[in-house]
Image (tube, rainbow, N blue to C red):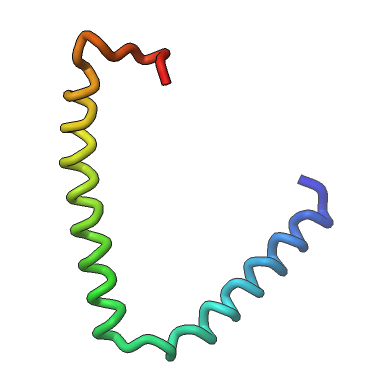
Length: 67
């Protein structure tokens, strides 16, 4: 990687971390915990639903190349 690119990346990371710190006080710990649980359950639903859809689409009338 060229030397200028590394410094640009580091500057971008530093800027990101600074912005992240400025948002930390905006949401309460309770809100962040609730959002964690929502994300957990959405991922769980996606995992279960994805397997069902894959099984359903495996029917003989569906081909992988068709849109």
